[in-house]
Image 1 (tube, rainbow, N blue to C red):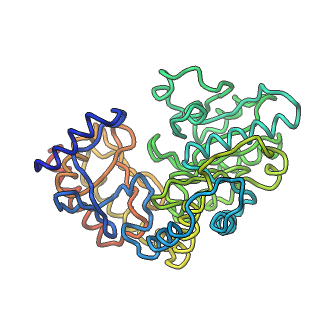
Image 2 (tube, rainbow, N blue to C red; image 1 turned 180 degrees about the vertical axis):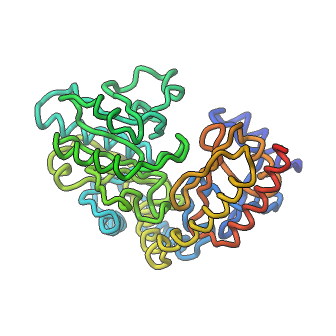
Image 3 (spheres, rainbow, N blue to C red; image 1 turned 120 degrees about the vertical axis):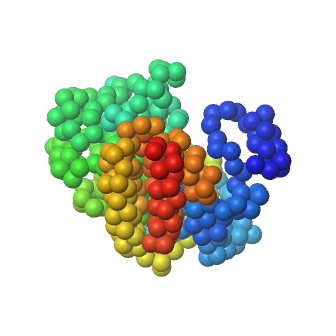
Length: 401
């Protein structure tokens, strides 16, 4: 490591709140699916800013759209209308099949809004405020208090209790577990369509369909968190579309803005007409012209470049190559995931492998201590899959044999 890199790292450690154990690299720029540090070293990026930079780095059309909006109007507040928000909402509704959109600054804020919408929906039915939400064990929905309260990992919650209360936890893909939590107070069932931080666990089709039927029968809202698994990552615009199980409320973020901080929660007209009203929820920055210009351009470029179709094509190749590693090494237990959201499950901590990969110019991330997660830019090709596998294979041999 050069002196300048070390200097920046030491200054960051002095000045920034230490809530992250960062890797010892200072990134400077990106080009396509590669990142470069301030010393010019190139890295193949299979993290994409945690499933954010779907279009890769340096996309000219995306950059120009943001530059053009910066010269026109960046912020006005939600007391006024703006054209990018209208265009972004129109396009997002079209690809999601939902009816109402609320733009936020992040995925966690989208979760907060979804929780409020569900509780207001239930409140308007019976005037009570003791309604319960069923969430899933091993889930992750964010770090704010509401999102943290429905995150099914006690380790994240324990120092910050009490949370918002009236949350019950069931097991993912275990319908009987969910059913045992249901009561006349249940107002919503909330889950990630594919669990990310919890270990890359996709919801099973039968499980989702049973949840949908249960919610329809008892007028419970089905809330699907598509923050990481949405926006084309599984080979569908949103992962639930693979199963045809439409939620009442859904959340999206991450790749929605491809780097600009923006999220959204969406709902059906049924929920929109009987939940949040003027004064119930708000945001200063959410839906501002700059963020929504990014969303509108991302959605446009996804369609122009057939990103969803490309994911379906290249993800099969990635799965094949990852399965080859599973067969080769006894310490890799299995592969699981959907599309370009994949995980390799090990019988031991993966930190040493991720560190060696970084040294060799490959950026990877974990999902728990024993899982390597693969969430690259959605524009990767088979040649980048081959490059990644070659580097990873060498790191595995060196780290564990």
